[in-house]
Amino acid sequence: MKNNSHKKGRYTQYPNKIGLFSKSKGGFIKNDNDVVLSFPFKDAVLEAGMSKEDVGRDERFLHQTLDSKDIDTLEEPKVLSDFRIINKDGEKALTASNDIELFDENGELNQNLLINGNNLLALYSLRERLAGKVKIIYIDPPYNTKGDANTFAYNNTFNHSAWLTFMKNRLEIAKELLRDDGVLAITIDDEEQAYLTVLCDEIFGRENKMGVLAVQIKPSGRTTDAYLSTSHEYALFYSKNENAPIINFFDLNENQKAQYKSTDESGNPYKWRDFLRTGGYSTPEERPNSYYPIYFNPETSDITVEKKQSPYVEILPIDSEGKHRVWRKTKPSLNIHIEAGEIKVEQVRGVWKVRLIDRIKEGVRPKSVWTDSKYDSATYGTKLLKQIFGGDKLFSFPKSLYATLDVLKLFSDGDDDIILDFFAGSGTTAHAVLELNKSDNGSRKFVAVEQMSYVEEVTKERLKKVISSDYQNASFVFLALKKYNQEYIDAIMEATNIKELEDLYVDMRNNAFLKFWFDRTEFEKDEDFRKLDLDDRKQALADMLDENQLYLNYADMNDTRHEVSVDEKALTNRFYGEN
Image (cartoon, rainbow, N blue to C red; front, top):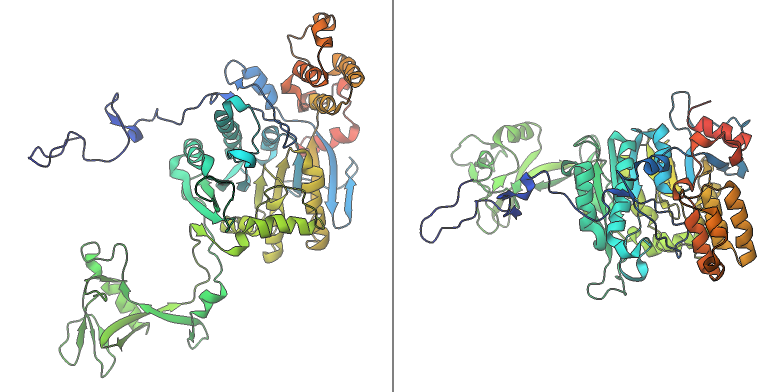
């Protein structure tokens, strides 16, 4: 790359190009394929098994090389449990004798699903049946925002890199689930938006970035901010394959429709628009083929691009400031419109104006900033959820139903599309799928995954209530990853006295998956352990358990130690297509 001119007053040692430059390598960073977003533990897997919002976890990072066997165990498909069908009549347990099929004979998903369990492990279990089949992944992950709004409570010493590792692990497997024309949509705020964008560029490819949407979710602004009062958040859009997705246009609103005041002989609305192009790329230098005179005969209303003498008048594309612009169409295109009667010329305040007919459109391309009041998360998220639950506030920061609904509308046409949300939260995405199906008689299926303990009383109950009241033809199947060591973790954390912990230890010693280094003999004569208070004893017992066996692997389902019921075996086999 050559330096700029050496002439006096024009010399610079830098190349004639703007970009991030590496002095050590003597080249632009964008030309170096080795330049990526780097962060501690990028080469690791963080399981992230929080089950309660106010109880974080200090989890170990599994290194992809050093802990490869542990990671393989972690990512194995899991045994499934607690199958229930929920519809307008309520809910009932599914058994091996039920005729409800989750997948049809072609392996296509038959039922909406709500899955309780660690979302990373659930994604690997879903891969068995849904790889390459999901049309839209819409997720609202924990934002890792500073202050009270932070819901990401893992490894606080490495909070930022832990969050990036957490997201990377999940996005990599999520990409495998997308269809070739599939789309990922992630909501995020300012705190991590820039880092998440670079991470997604790396995982999905920069060429697959479709755009960034800004949504005004809190018109009044956030009162806890120190400087700017935040009133918006973002949605990042990535495709699995460049240019494969097709975007749907939004319907015109009543104000937009009202602009089309005229109708043609067929009764179709239209309006007239200025044939003069303004704004970007509107000069003769930029569009020379669109700069030409139009000739108009005021006596006969004849319009032509052929040069004419009086009584014809010559009209050039000149704006109100006297600047030369261009027409919206080239000469050949204009002639087609003239022949179709779609061009007219009129005089406005002594100036000749050329107009082009603009017929009403079926829709309008969505813009990158959404400010409609229906996107207000307080009104159409928090208040809506309180209405569903009779006034009780059971969930913090729910999304606006209509913001989610409109994102889904962009890319889903309703023909059996699968929409996945593995941060299901209060169930807004699943609710939006039900509403979208109702509005266009679609047959979309939702797959929602939630690991927090509120999945039963909030997520499931919300969907149960709205189906009963608004979507009576809909149903979904609730199921859970079958816990193993996680059962012991839960029991340890819920214990209220030393005796309960002592009984739990006996059970763990005989039946749990303990870490390979655990020495029962040394532990049972450890006097220091007996001096610990209740909370420290809980932590010590939890530390004995193998984190890779928190949920029961499908491969271990028939081991009699694990007490998997006949129904669980049958339904799990059916889920994985092993009837």
